[in-house]
Length: 198
Length: 165
Ligand SMILES: [Cu+2]
Image 1 (spheres, rainbow over the protein chains, first blue to last red):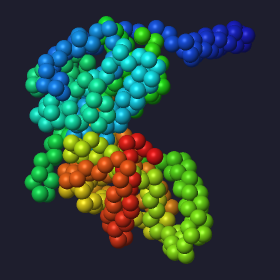
Image 2: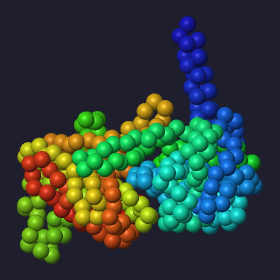
Image 3: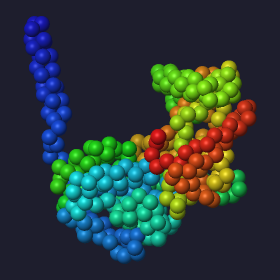
Image 4: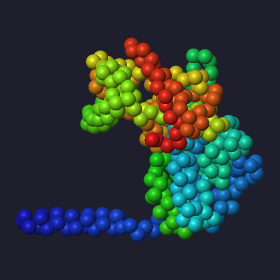
C-alpha cells in the first residue's frame, strides 16, 4: 500500500508546486475585482471644492484613509504612496493615475490643513474632508474602521489619536477595488499592479 | 508590557551583533581622530540608527526612532525623552486588533537587560512627540534627550529624515 500513499503524496506535491509556480509568475495575473468594497464618494477637497471621486474615472487610483495628526503610520504611508506615484509618472503614466487621501478627522483636518499637509508630499494628491457623517459613509464603503482614542495628560491637555485600519486601496479606471495593501506595502508591487490596470 | 518585542532572543542576538560591529568600526575611527570616548562607551548606553520623522510644517506630532543597546552590567530602563520642540513626549507601542485596526498605546517604561538591544521603528515602539512647538525640518538635526530610571539622561543629535536611514 505504500506506493499508493507515496503516489498520493507525490501528486499533492506536484499540485502544490504547480500552484506555487503559477502564483510566482511575474506576468501579473488579472487582479480580481473586489465587489464588496468601494464606490464613488463625495466629499470636499483641499481647495474647499465639492469633489466626487467619480471624476477620477479613467484613472488608476491609490486611495487611503488617515489623519494629519497621525505621527507614525500616516506620514509613512503617504511617503510610500507618493513614491509609487512618482515612479508611475516617470514611466509616463502621470495623466492616467491619481492618489487620494481621505481624512477621518474632519474636526482638525479642514480643507486648509489638508492642503498644507499634502503639499509636503505632493500637491497633486487629492485630499478629502467633509462632515463627520459624510466621512462615516465614505469609510463604510471601503470597510475602513476608525475610533477616536482620547487621553488626558497630567496638564489636563486632551490628546486625540485614532485606532484605525490602514489599508491602501488600488482602484482601476472604473473605480473598482482591485487590491489592498498594508500601510507598509511594497512600492514596486503597487507600481507593477497599477501598470497592469493601465 | 509588550515583552515580545525585545525578549525575542534570536532577534535580539542578531541585532546585538550588528550593533557591536558598528560600535567597533565607529570606535576604531574615533581612535584615529580623537582620544576620547571609546573605553567609556563600552560600558554605557548606546544609540544607533537614530532619526526623527520629517513631517509637514502644519503637523502637531511626529516620532523619533532609534536602536538602543544596553552595554552596562545592570538593567537599564528607558522612561521617555525630552526635546525642546515638543510639549509632550511619550513612549508608544503599536498594536493591531482582530479587525485590523491599529492603535498606539502609551508604555510607561522599556527595560533592557545587560547586553540587550531594542529597535524603535515605524509601525512598532516609538518615541511619540506631541504638541510640536517648532516642526523640525528635513535635513536638520535635533537634540533628543532620553530619560532613564537610574542612569542620567542621554542626549544625542537626531537627523530629521523623511524615511528611515
Ligand atoms: Cu505614538
